[in-house]
Each structure stands twice: as structure tokens, then as C-alpha cells.
Image 1: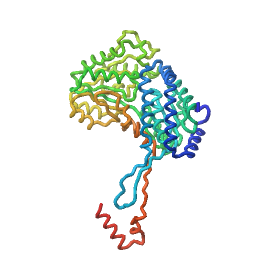
Image 2: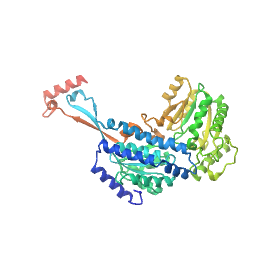
Image 3: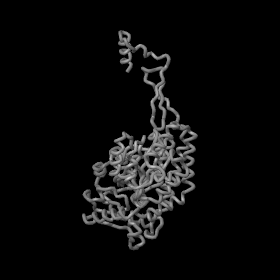
Image 4: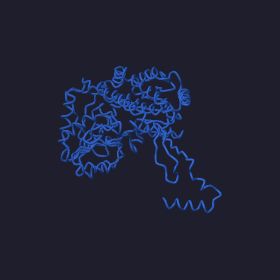
Length: 473
């Protein structure tokens, strides 16, 4: 639909249920055709979608949209189309010895109607990537994009409405009240990407219908710089990940743990990297704005709170221009001498502020990470494999990239998802197909089965059979 304006939520949901009932197991050709339509939608409308996203942000780097949104979605479609027939095949599994010569297999089956609630920071990728997985699995899809990016949300509703029937894939636009009604619908699966705080509310709303929920949340993702690392290279890569989309990324490095003796060297290397990437900020189309005044004010308040609590606040301003609050081009800012009680260490930053924390031993760094809620991502930089493996064994996070940032999310063969406060469930590639499928177990009995030996009335023969079976376990 051009979406919520044509049908109310309940009637749209009913239409999708009816559509699924009429075709509850679409064959590969139907699914591939839906993916092809989604591919053409993205390819044919890349420029207007990028323009809408940029207008919503104030300025959003076109290259960042091209890489993190358009390419990401097209890559996920290509991967799904290339592997879909294999994913759909039923899989033979071994049958327990006591049930031979029967056979067992697993049949991936569509769930029904999938609801997707997507956020504002990557409004194209985080709406369509899960939709691609749900459509590949044979489901109907309803998407509720964020009201924080209204231009893009309205455009997406229009474009989806042009390419898909309302009973196939539809976008519902509107404010937070519509969002609350959306997550109360009895979906067969609900997929939410957003903050931990809102994720808790979504989980509670879905629980009333016993709707299974995937929560892709956020948190404070650490970067650990080891003493064995190439410090300038590590600082450069952390700067790239921190400032991509101006830090408005759920897996951006939230804070950095650096050997105490290298804190100043790290700060200098980070500053050089920022200057090389962004010679100016205010008039630079490559540097993305903070999405709105509320988030801009929140980030300013985090920096001010840290300053008042004794942190060293080091803004990086390569061009030397005065900051224009209306443009919301927030200066990349290092925070040194931070403490755990500061707000910037209590909340997910989600912007270009980077706390830098010194540590004496690797055990101390690991303990610092483990004393906090489990993060969505963790980054480790170093050349010592034993120390790398110690970090991998002794920390728990949604995913890890070693000697770089962000890139584990771009691997179609790796599951992407959080753990604990950073989320539950995972998708991407085949993992997304499985997430939105019921892995139906099927046992096929043989005509030669000996189960008649265990039917009532029980007697000596049944007891003897049971004894023999127990000896074989």
C-alpha cells in the first residue's frame, strides 16, 4: 500500500494472512521472482532513496548510503537468489537406531506473516535486508519504518506499493502510536531493530500473542587495542568505523581500551586519521550529520557531563571552522580520563564521541568488558594470536572483527545478531532463511518397522525388547 493510508493495520494484516493461506508454500520460482522485484526496486530508485535519506539526516554521505545500504541489500538479494533452491531442499538426517529402517528429514516451511520494525540510522538496509530473508523463506511481510526518517519512509511505502501487492509485502508509515499497534499484531514472527530500551517493550507486546521475536539491539561495543598491535593502523581503522555515518551505527566502536602507556599516542594517531579523511567538516558532503536536534542535544549533553566530571574532552576540527548547530555536523571528539560513572560510559553513544580508557594488563581489559552488558560487537587489534584467542574465549559478544571494524556484518555466511542486552536471534544469508522458516521435523515409518513388538498388551516379549534396546544405548 502507499501503505497505512489505504488500509488500517488489522485489515492489512488480514489480507496478508489470506494471501499466505492461499499460497502457504510458494515454490522457488515465485520466491525468486519476488526477490527480483526487490532487486529492481533498489536498482531503479537508488538516487531518489539516497536523496530522501540525505534530506532526513540534513546531510548523509552518498557513498555511505551506496556502500552500507544499496550495495548491502543488493548483495543479500544476490546471495539469497544464488542459494535459495539449496536452502529450500528438505535435509535428510540420521534416524535413531531403534526406529530403523524408518527415515528422518527436516523440511523448511514458511511461517506466515512476518512483521519488521526498522530504525532510522540505516533506513534502507535495516528495512529490506530482513525483508529479503523473509521473502526468500516464503513469507508475507509488513514493514514499519522509523518516523525519524519520514521522507524515506514515505518513499519506501510508495515504491513497495508499486512493486508488490498489499498481501505480499507492504509498508506501514506513521508515528510511535502506530508503531505500538503494529507490534501488538499476532505476527508469526516479529523482527525489531532498535534500542535496548524499546526492544524490551517490543518483546513484552509480542509476548501477549506468543509471537517469536528477533531483537537486533545495540549497546557499548568495545575496541581492544593490544600492545602487539600496529597502533597507527588500529587508530585509523577505529576512526573509520567510529565516524562512518557519524557514529550512528549499532556496531560502531563505542569505546576503546588502550594500553595505558599508549593513550596519548592513540589520541594523536586518531586525530591524524580524522584529519586525513575529513579535511573539513561543516561543508564536507562525506561527513554525515546527526539525524535530528534531539540526538544532537543528547550527544552534546554526554560530552558536557564527561567534561564536568573530569574527563579531558578533545574535539577534532580539521578545518578550524566554528560548529553550526543547525547543520548538526558534530565534531569527532575523544574523551580521555573517563570513569564508569559518567553518562558516556552508561549509555550507548551512537555518535562521534569516543571514550579512550587505559589498561595495564589484558586480564584487566577483559574484566572491564565483562563487567558490562554483553555488546553487539567487539573489535580486537593485535598480532599476538594467543592473546587474540584469550579475548575470543573470555568475552561474549554478538560478533567480532579482528584487526578491523564493522566487517563481520558484511559476511553473508556469518550470522549477525546480539546476545543478552544487545539482542536475541540472528540473520543474514542462510541464517536469515532459517530464522524465518519452521524447520519441520518429519519421520517416515517403514513397512518393516518392529514397533508392533511394543504394543499392548505388554508381556515378556515387550520387556525383552526393552532390555535389548537399553543394552544398545
